[in-house]
Image 1 (cartoon, each protein chain N blue to C red):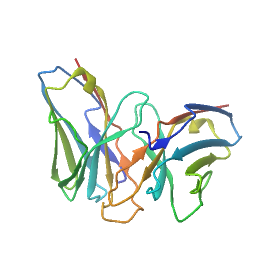
Image 2: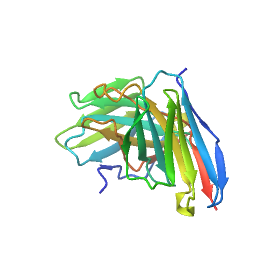
Image 3: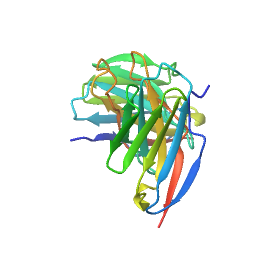
Length: 112
Length: 116
């Protein structure tokens, strides 16, 4: 039972354009959502997060949008840079523990 | 210091060996985690320690034995592993389990384990 889903295994974008990575979840108890970036042979790096009381959070080139009614969140990167090429994981948590449930990841390739 | 370090980076072991993975953080975090990640899969939680006490064990086989000697260190002792245990083992830490939601986990680079 995959509670957090990233339906696009890969995405290719031109440098300077917008990258939009999507994530869907099924558990309505989730109240905090995070995006991590992972380069090969490295651990995931925290990128940006959003709580369920908000619908948007912005940090520089990165913006996360949350649509609670649709149980959907997205990460927008603009402008995209070649250094953004990595696997992006969406993760969610809820309840008393800090247990993160990760999505399956989307491999983003930003073409120069 | 916002880094989580893990040693060794790579480990090859036989099914009869005993080895340990080590993780260290100096951010003053009181929650530490072990995750297992297989190729092309998301990280899966194995154990959570909170204030040096085991808080969550996600039904991990006993051939994996975690230990938290102090608030900065987390070990994972391995014994009699199977080839299917080959994976990337990630350690993470966060400020405090008890803090409400704003509690990002910071990951180390992982140990790539191969069991022959």
